[in-house]
Amino acid sequence: GVVLVVGAGDGAGQAIAKRFARGGYTACVMRRPKSAVSLDQLVDSITAAGGRACAYPADARREDQVVAVMDDIERQIGPIEVCVFNIGANVRFSTLDTTERVYRKVWEMAALSGFLVGRESARRMVPRGRGTIIFSG
Image (tube, rainbow, N blue to C red; front, side):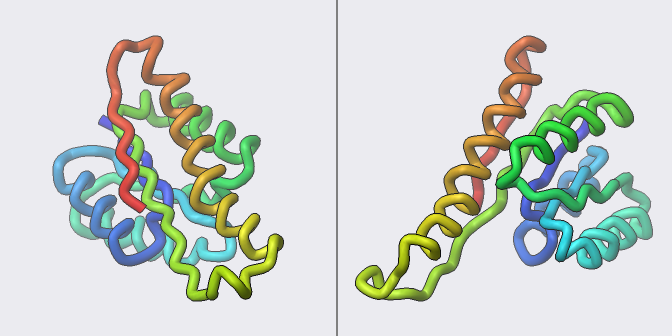
């Protein structure tokens, strides 16, 4: 099977990807391009342990990138059976001091990206009548 772990660069995301890989899934890991080095290290770690993995440096806040990643996975590897959305926001600003610009960035990261990933996963899974989407961020 194929799992896509969005937000897989470190911490919980890495652990999730490694666990699915140990369970026999091909772990497709996605994180923003500026963090691509950690994705490559994660893929190397999974493959060194005998698993299968591939890196997708992409921004989950960009609809075109989410669609392109999922299309590529399904074309090159196989249908996405499980999608794990593991993006979270840890914002340490007082609400009274938060600007609209900062709030929009947090919203894009936490809400918009979750919507895009969930919708695009569902668009592929619903016609097949199977699949799992997990939100863990």
